[in-house]
Length: 475
Image (cartoon, rainbow, N blue to C red; front, side, top):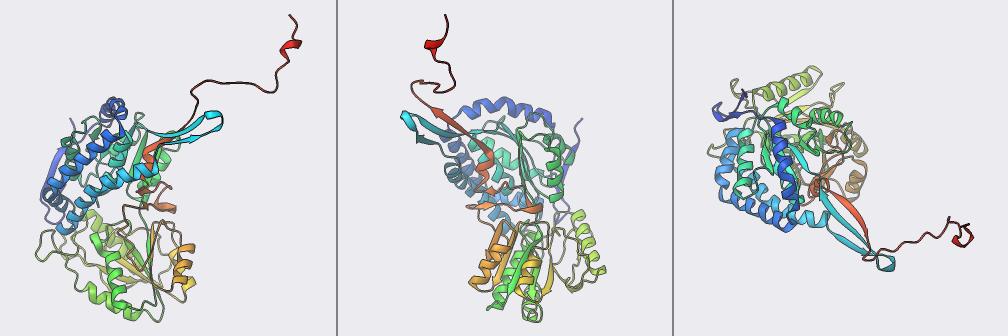
């Protein structure tokens, strides 16, 4: 008998969704059977299918956003922006497929031609996260379907209802059920899916720890594509900003949107020692105005709870570790309700903390680090094994050029938040933040592989060297 999986509303504890766990082998088998017919359809046919999907989502936008808010706890206004991103992903992916995987024919000698076209891999597994349970897996699924792949999608065990809704929208748009399969389950089902011989690749968004485990699992299968979109310990450097209030606003947006549950969220605020206090004061004043409440509260909150009690407990343990090592709490990480995973936004000076652990604190905690000069700020920005996002607020054009050149990250911004990367550009990181398979606009790159052909309408062949003269051969 399959086990049941239940998701609950982190803001209230109420049940949101219930269903049975699935069988990875059966879902991959169904996708495998459906792949040939789907891949033989024209690209224009597949594009039309995903455009219908966008229309289905558009018609059910409010219903979809409400489900996302109930299952994640994120404010309703933010859930609506996620649904909008799901819709917008279709046109972006169509453009990306045309730009990143076009058909080319080049003239060669003697009337020959060289062609470059792309083929789908086959069956791709997609493992989705809970923080953007619709937008992020959709960013893999749409490009994969356009390229001609079949997909088996396992949503996070914390947001299965959103995953089911997303898949249902694809099916309502006429995309065959075999082409996109839903696998409900937890880590065990995820490992089973990743280990299926019938998949041709896996597209993953999640933690660095899980990404490293998948990297090891795929080490002996180089014929399978593996795209990892992982987390970050992202630096935000504020350097002699002319407008302190704006710098503080960008810092708060970077650190506390989505209750800090964004892979691009600022984790470390790097400031010039001795000139930092006006900025800290402005940040604290703004933090004091942040509304933390349930998704449908009036007025709308800036942030809701983190995903569950386990996540809140882990963040509190990480906070306590920083405090015990010498951190100075500027705004405490408080837990207003023990029975629910609400956390208040927190600010802590860790300049004097020895042996700081280089890890992603996936929640509303911003660590302040004071440095003596700009070179030290860059060194501190690079003081991490991760390399996803980094931002400089203030500074001169020359300093930003220096920052861009020296900082190791896949997203480097100037006078903009660390988060909110555009889907019309590549998205990915280096170090523990990914495996050089950037997503967003570049997702087309890992959803199809190039095939080169040399073509001639008439066969011609000659061997010019290395053969004996036929006139000298004995009878």
